[in-house]
Length: 111
Image 1 (tube, one colour):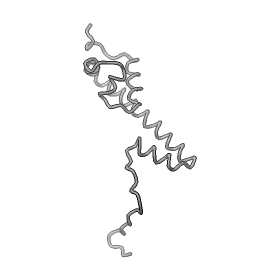
Image 2 (spheres, one colour):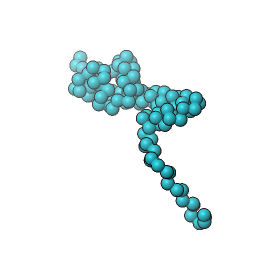
Image 3 (cartoon, one colour):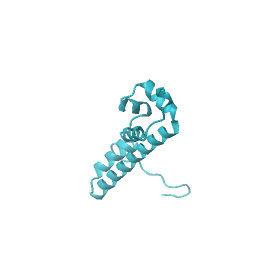
Image 4 (cartoon, one colour):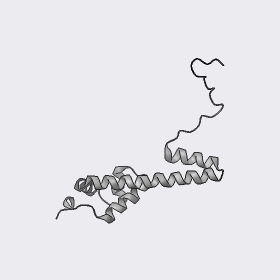
């Protein structure tokens, strides 16, 4: 049986989920597993739904871990660490240095 005809094993799917936890891009996961690009494409072609589910599971685990880290930082009063987690893992932009912009009152309200 050729490589592209085999469905991924549960161990392979678990390894894909672990690699996806490291926030690797989809194409880089195969390299993390020690597969050549052709082997990775063949694996994805053999069962795309199972591979996509394993990647989604790994990314969800990473988000849950980062969320737990954020909660720990907040509970212990580590605001800078919490901001770092938000910027590094959740895509928050860095704050603008200096004075924050003045907020505008809602329409129809005079200040």
